[in-house]
Length: 154
Image 1 (spheres, helix red, strand yellow):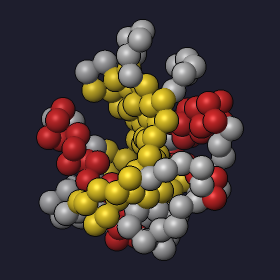
Image 2 (cartoon, rainbow, N blue to C red; image 1 turned 45 degrees about the horizontal axis):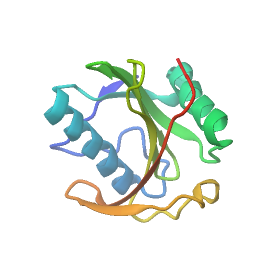
Image 3 (cartoon, rainbow, N blue to C red; image 1 turned 60 degrees about the vertical axis):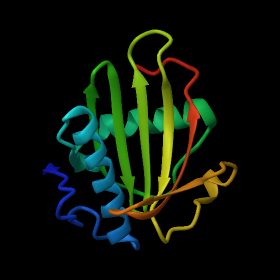
Image 4 (cartoon, rainbow, N blue to C red; image 1 turned 90 degrees about the horizontal axis):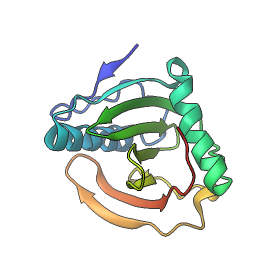
């Protein structure tokens, strides 16, 4: 069952099995606030099992671009379009959040972003990436990294 992510009252619904539940909920709320403020988009997530095509699209990009396979099980996912950008998010039990920003216009920006919840270790499969830190009122310290998508993934 889907639910709208509230960034005023942070909820852990759907993320209870994570060892960093509160931090992951804050990270999810931080993303919801960004999309509400920048695009007036209501950030709605679904249990990952209910949106297998979204999870498969993200995992396909990871495998195709960098040979990455995420060990942690996905808990929730969402996919939507703002302006001419296709966005997808997958939130994992470990506290990892992966997003894909895929501009639909030729030559537009396309990238995969990784965000680590406060309190989680860098997953071994992402050990080659350098992570920058940022502070968030909702999520504490977020560590993030990204890579540019070079192939077509429609």
